[in-house]
Image (cartoon, rainbow, N blue to C red; front, side, top):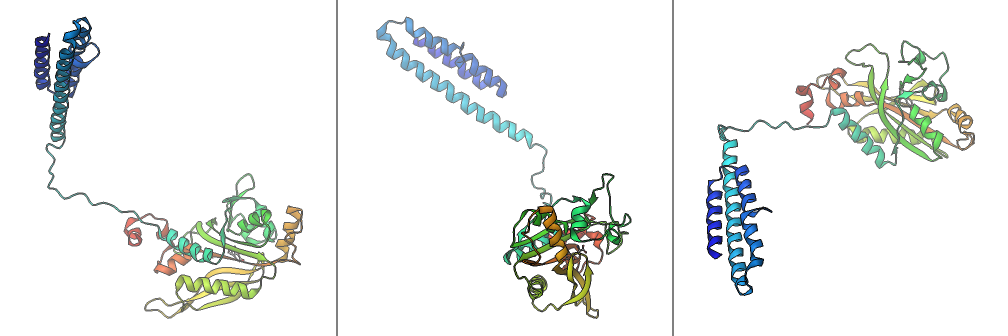
Length: 338
Ligand code: DAH
């Protein structure tokens, strides 16, 4: 019996050595160690031996099984090495690697993140609203009369349904105040759409950041302080800022904000960066109607709002001369920000 085991073991080792690839090796394993394998059968035969022979046979069986298993494992490693070598055959490992392209944030994302970071430090929370808006949220609720030029089909993208692509992020003010109770202090960055002729300073889609603060006793001084602080945090503490009286339907009084730009080799000049004002009581009154309560009673709350163009801010920050560069996806331009 023991001799028979020796023969099986010798056969197995020879078959393992002769296995030319992993498939052949696996077949060999099955032939000897599988359910119907030769060694497995030899183990099953043990039960027919006289009891006194069983221990010695069992031991010999274990030795044979261990030898065969180890030989298979070793052969597998050897075959894998051969495979690995084959797979890099013909590849010149001394060639320098291909350049790794590193991604980076888009300048619009960079400026938006910084603006949001500054305003969040001041207690403004992020708010959001749809880009496909109702006329009500984009215009009516913001006290914009029917004949206001911004509502014109020449200026606004309308859908057949009567909905439109929001022309500004100010609609988020309304959507927020429909649900919230004062104090409300939010900012809403997002896209806005206008039927502008495309040129170096206009696109039909651009990015705004809206802000709104409503509470008891919010004053014009709060508006000025907040926005002065904001623009100085963004562009540097020396930044000169002016508030120029203006008109917006949803604020009274209203202002445009200019900052003084010192471009290299040019006379300093004022450039408009935002619109702002004290929320018009008419906006609060229309909320009373849609909400059915007096939570935004213009006798009790006041507020300020502002809206700025992030594209414009990015152009100022990095001296970008043509707004179209911001949407061209030209890596020659974009990689300087990475
Ligand atoms: N919605 C204005 C625009 O798109 C910007 C603006 C002006 C927003 C004054 C405001 C504001 O919230 O108070 O030109």
